[in-house]
Length: 229
Image 1 (cartoon, helix red, strand yellow):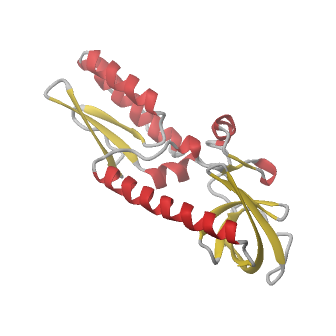
Image 2: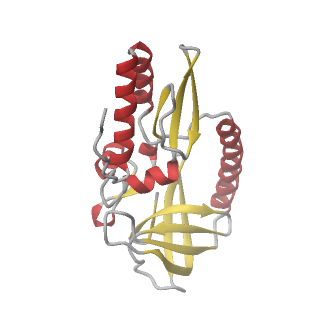
Image 3: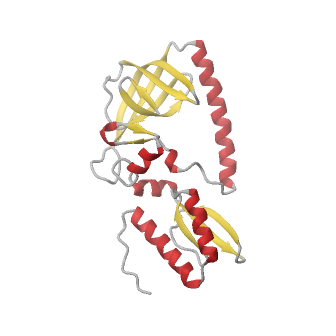
């Protein structure tokens, strides 16, 4: 999360030469003009005078199914040596961390919860406060359907009656043994569902699968059909 002049933005890409930012209100400075970009990266404040190279509307929406999004390209002007070295060091650490996360993802380890994502609130404000994100989920600020579509689902399969196997999937269907839920669900809730499923009888397990399916349908704005046992 950052601020470009008076506009709250999200830094999407950054290098020692410039940055790309995302925002959902138009910039107050025209293309070719200058503005100051400020953000905190792992407790270090980065301040850079920038030239706005381009700014364009990427997506427009007035409903609850998406966000109006602008992307702007910035060129850094006369970075101080301290700021340049700080950026180089942090970019190196970020790349190493990204490679590590790719290896974890290949083994089925989940990324950070969506609750830590910076999101737009009403009035064009940005927040990364968990309560602010919880308030925005499902609203026009952070449509649940878009989050679910981008994050996918987690399928928990119970093998040999006691071993849980989980995998990321784009299929919202329920397995024969276990359940599938949105990848945006809280990790603690996932563990509770696994425990409840393990302790339940056949009817109880079917009920958990039904609730999981209904939760997915509700989160994606789908009106489920009538359930016939």
